[in-house]
Image 1 (spheres, one colour):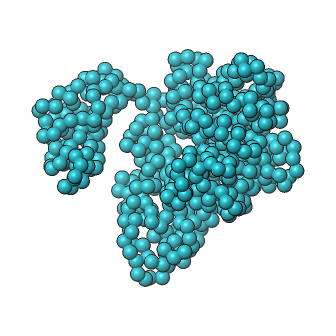
Image 2 (spheres, helix red, strand yellow):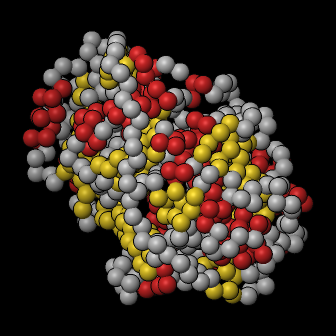
Image 3 (cartoon, rainbow, N blue to C red):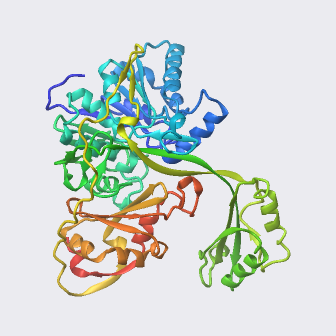
Length: 565
């Protein structure tokens, strides 16, 4: 894989989650030239799903769809010399590696497969003070992947690694970076963070999607052209849908982050040093990223079964919505339930559905029978004895299990990291030799506030973009401006207090604001808004994907000067 330093390593993505577009692997291998194809299958919820799979069958615990995608594409990848690196191994990377070998044998193909293991800490959870989880997985870094590639692997399967490691590992192996090449590693982390969620870098979940042009083609998956100095260009195959712009890349950089220091097991990337510049149509250059030694601890994701839940949604139509909701609650007062009234109704509606509000009743507990038909049946028995216009959105059902996600941190030296080469050789990967305690970056100076002048009441989203997502029970909301004038206004206007005023559901929760002037962006972290994580389904948007769009829909007073280009 050796090329002159001026030639980039072209690293593409073909999966952003377990369930992503099935044709993406084939599209990326045949749509243009690439060197490495990555696939990210592991979200916090996915680890719970794989943990339940493993309980049923110890030979499972990996993303089975990867094999289906690979079956029609493996020959093409080998023919083109494209390396494949994926975390689809989940809780059983060795099992998936063996399944890939079996698949290749059945196809009559000769493939060199390696895997990375050590992240699974479930058997040592008690010893490490992690309780008794269904799954306990440390976020490993990139050096096991690099070792496997340097040993000649065509395919590298991992379990839980940091998402960006799927890009950092191939780049480090290709360019010969060492453990203290912090700026280069940090640059690759930024590139990896941008492409890890697939088409979210090319217009997916993008606030200004109406600016993307024709939407009749599926959005293309992204490519990071990584250079020897760690800089990169984000692009996509020609002719694919969507766009790569400074806006789409900014949005993805803000996705599921915290402060300016973005920590991982190999490097802490300073997101406040990232520089974005256009590099031609559908090309954005990432440069200037600085890196620091990683923290001495490694994050561990913990998934447990929280119990069982059931839900009934009552439809309340027309007049007296609040009174109707109160009537039902009184009739089911014996339930230990969480009630949420969604005022989706419109006054004087021309369509019946637009006259309806939704009253959600959720129960949780440890007894599936008590939460099953006994609960939903009690709700349905009110059909002829409750508010006028009574009906529910679905028939009564059984209780279903729900999961709880938490995270912990353990000393890096307590986490094994093993590269298993194609010939079976096992190589222990040492933790970082140099570490640095993670500290918040002091808030930078804000731009000067705009002079007073005329203003208009407008949706916040007419001026700024936003992207939000989940991290355990917390959510992040990244907000960015697209001009210096808009940034001057946004940085001074959208304080924590104003954020909480605009989003009343966050008013009682801890909220932290992080300022990223280089991206003209603010990132808010809202603790506890998702309860015990996505699998607990504490709110109707359990992954916080739409909080940013809710924020953009709020009406605020925007100065005319802020709208100047």
